Picture: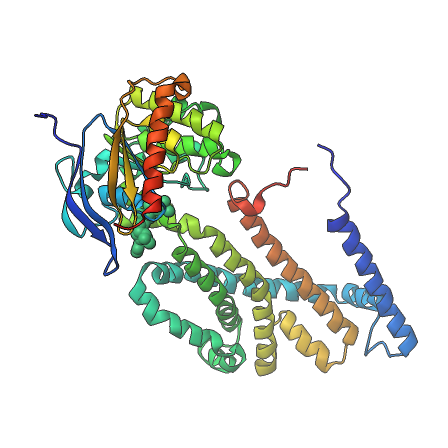
Amino acid sequence: MESVPPIVKFTSLQKRYGVGPVVLDTINLTVAPDDFISFIGPSGCGKSTILKLVSGLSPGSTGELTVMGVKPREARDRQAFIFQDATLLPWLTAQLNVEIPLRLRGRPAVERQTTARKMLELVGLGKVADYYPRQLSGGMKMRVSIARALTLTPQLLLLDEPFGALDEMTRNRLNEELLAVRSLSPFTALFVTHSVTEAVFLSNRIVVMAANPGRFYAEVAIDFPYPRRPELRGQPEFQAKVNEVTRLLHEVEISPSS
Amino acid sequence: MKKSFPVLTWFLPAVSGLIFISLWYGVRVVSGLQSWILPTPVEIVAAAVHEHTRLLAAAGHTALGALGGFLLAAIFGFFTSLMLGLSKSLRASLYPWLLVLQMTPVIVLTPIIMLWAGPGMPGIITITWLISYFPIVANMTQGLLSTDMNHVALFRMCNARRWQEVLLLRVPAALPYYLAGLRIAATLAPIGAIFGEYMVGNASGGTGGLGFLVYSYNTQIKIPALFATALTSCLLGFVFVAAVAWLNWAFLHKWHDSFEQADH
Ligand SMILES: Nc1ncnc2c1ncn2[C@@H]1O[C@H](COP(=O)(O)OP(=O)(O)OP(=O)(O)O)[C@@H](O)[C@H]1O
Ligand SMILES: [Mg+2]
């Protein structure tokens, strides 16, 4: 029925670290190019592991996982990872931090500078390009991190609780900015979060996960059209979705094992 | 921003120093000790002035030996650490032996070094190198091993080559550790050089340097001059530490948390 090839496809994937317990069990998921999927669930249910698998930082145990039709590792140059702490290199200015992916690919200096500059302006940080990370606020650091991830215009963006350490106001603003950036430079997103409102605001699909072993418990479709305005958060339909996901989360946390 | 009077940095040390010197005078007066056992600060300064040509020449000689050994330790230490920090098997095979070398008191090795490197500057430089080498290696290796795993993951995600990871990530991340190693080495290098000169002075009738002056003033029972030599050594040590502190500042003040300006 669908003609677009999936960006990410999990088929009965199981994951253990070494000889440890099963961390993720029978994961099946097909990600379409315009998906923005949030993963939410109790701590330790394997959300970060999902992203590590897709990025090829950690291999699956059994089952199959393809990213853009190939093995995760081979698709690395078309994806980018945004970590919870901004993981900026403290000895480089914001500008040079954003240049890092280009530098690692041996791009010429002029191209690096103009691209990084453009990305920093895109996230509203043109003025602080020469600041070192310690001179930036938490929100600014995260923006630099987003700019860095976008320098290579990835098709797939993996975000592991990127706004988890920020206050709610900053987080809301960055949520809006992330969607704005995405409308300019489209990417598929796999997004890990603990915040239900954030997940509902950003995603078109939310996967609720359960722990012991980590597994997909339920999926909720969020059909509000993009672009989404901040006012959406005040609407009753929005609140209904938040309630629905919250309820699922309670179910998961009350019955931790199957 | 108004600058407050630097009470902690200047005033308090000056006060405690004055108290110390007064106590010194007090002890001398009360105890009735002779000048050749406990000279007063003034007698020491006078001896320093009187002996200043010898002291300066000796300080220059010692500085040269200390600098030579320090630089060797800094350069070899850097590359040794790279080897140890980047290869597990090299680390496993070499680090225990480095520890063994570190555990062997240099005083035991000195005659052997003199025998092999000769009793002049080469021997002194070798001793200094040996003494200041280990803290540099230990620190920098630790630094190379402490790279943030998320940074490594970031580099892996960008398909970074091994050399890029080393040059753009591991080495810069280890730089503060390396500089911490240099700071320790800077306090040890003049000590190493003076010790070496002292041993050489003993062994071969002298080649100059503060260590040799210690030996020679001691045999001549010129005690105030001996104190003046101690003072000069102390100043030389300060110069070394200050130079490395400057290096540290130059490399780190822009980005490292240890230079975060307090915001009063
Ligand atoms: N490198 C590793 N080696 C061994 N076990 C690991 C490793 N990383 C994660 N695990 C285990 O896998 C399980 C899932 O971890 P993961 O980090 O994916 O959870 P998470 O859902 O992201 O949790 P949180 O919300 O706290 O970030 C945990 O039980 C954890 O102990
Ligand atoms: Mg996690």
